[in-house]
Image (cartoon, rainbow, N blue to C red):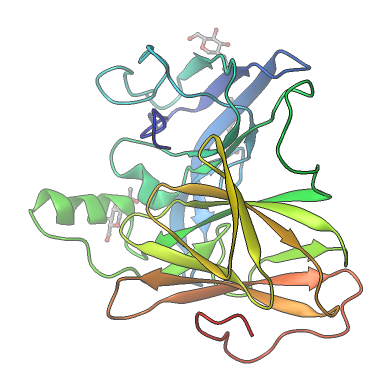
Length: 288
Ligand SMILES: *[C@@H]1O[C@H](CO)[C@@H](O)[C@H](O)[C@H]1NC(C)=O
Ligand SMILES: *[C@@H]1O[C@H](CO)[C@@H](O)[C@H](O)[C@H]1NC(C)=O
Ligand SMILES: *[C@@H]1O[C@H](CO)[C@@H](O)[C@H](O)[C@H]1NC(C)=O
């Protein structure tokens, strides 16, 4: 989201089409129907932004930094808002870019209603990637969430006040224990993690497991291993996780960072041959 992804989609469009360039199949087309609909991420009914009926929105496999081109960036001033019932076709070239990003609406505080999703740009098969192909990939969109709707939150900001403390954290549009990632024991997986929230940094950890950071927003990195990662607003990381622990369920944990009150949300890492589910509160920082 840095380097050009700051803000991408003017909403509310009813239909958007995307053209993306991929190494092998040079074109990708995406048609989106963007609507309001009922969502219940923290257990209360809210009006959220759905893309083709989904919250979060569908992943885009491929995307692009807007190099020397502001005309497809989605920022107010270079792109006009898309009125309800109308459509706009984004035409983007990815060229040499790779990596993990995300999209979100940039006007009217619509991001507080959803409309975000992952953008994953694959490497062409002829370009070496500095780690073996993972057995699978998962995208994790996490961040703070408010029960107040986007127009009420916008009114608070427009009134010159800070946003209230968020009501919870979401992982892929769900509150705690709403999502399960299933892995096979002994295999290595790529997790692409983005903080799609509005106000807080989060700490991300997968209990009992180490994470090797391999990519940050389009750049393959020096590969260091961590127990937990701080992911600030708008950041995206790729980590490799090897399912090398006893076959059971483990918590995937996000918690707010640098806040006096700490919010936490969990999802489940499940070994396909899991001998047991995970219970009780997640442990803090340490990975035991
Ligand atoms: C978009 O979805 C809405 C709600 O499901 C539907 O009423 C509408 O016809 C759809 N529009 C298009 C262009 O598919
Ligand atoms: C987009 O709008 C144009 C005219 O405004 C229309 O011809 C076209 O069918 C629309 N495309 C979609 C996918 O709705
Ligand atoms: C947001 O909620 C307020 C009530 O708190 C309501 O008046 C307003 O219409 C809602 N806005 C949207 C976009 O749903």
